[in-house]
Image 1: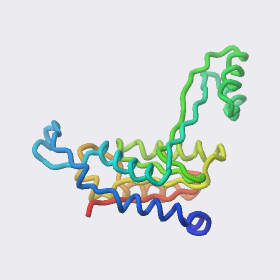
Image 2: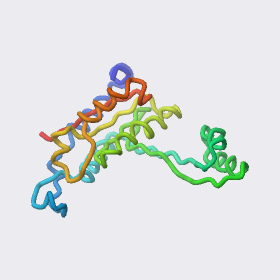
Image 3: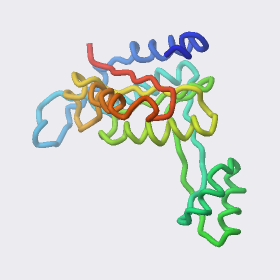
Image 4: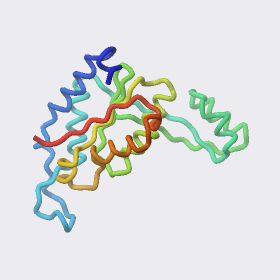
Length: 193
C-alpha cells in the first residue's frame, strides 16, 4: 500500500474507482440450474469479471501473458527456468534430450508495473494467483506490486458458485506469515451495496 500511495497514487485511485464503478446489479444471473439455488437471484462470477474488465480497460489496463516451456526433468528445469526468450528456452530443453511443453502465466490487468487480478473463480484460484501468478511476474521483475480483488463473505454468499472470500483469504495470508507469498501484495475485498 505504501508503495502505491508514494509512487503510484494515480494507479491506486484508478483501482479504487474501478471497484466503485462496477455496478454489481448488472451481474445478476437468474438462470441457475443448481438444485440449491433455483429461483434465487445470484451474482454471476463471469458477469462480474466482465464488468471489472470493462472498467480497467477503460483506464488503459491490459492483460499480460508470458509464454514459456516446461519439461519433466528437474535438472533441465533448473537450468532453463530463467531463460526469458521462449524459443531459446525451448531449444535448450530439446538440446538436453527432453520434450518441451508450452504453457503460460497470465494476469488480468497490468499498468506501470502494477498487476491486478480479479478473482471470482473457484475457491482455490486465489491461492494459485498469490503463489504462482503474482510470484511469477514479481520474480521475473515484471511487476512491483500485486493487487488481488475478491468478494467479501457478504458477496460470496450471494454468488452462483463457490468462490474464495476475503475474510478467509486474509486469515490464510496472516497464518502463512509475511514472507509467504513473497510478493508485495494488496488484498481487496468487495461487497454489494
